[in-house]
Length: 132
Image (tube, rainbow, N blue to C red; front, side, top):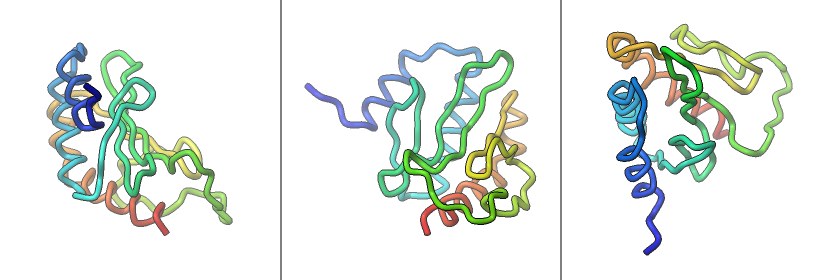
């Protein structure tokens, strides 16, 4: 029986082993609660979150002592005439890796809780700016 994408993520998380699994699950809950138009699936061997079937946020677990949430614009390259960051990040959470890609790093549960409100804000801002 083929699982739907949400079931695939649930299965992935059930079998997932990581020293920061609790923190990762908390960030996943925050993301899904931030915008009820988000869906999830597995991409790059990690949970990824889509808006209008376009990937926008993907976990990265390849580091020791922390994990990342990658903010991106999906597979299609968008026009960015200014070549600077997509918008002015008033939260200070985003570490811009490119004009259309940014990263938020999480180290522990206190860090996750401290960033929760700003994370919800920046997720919705990212969706707004990348869905024009």
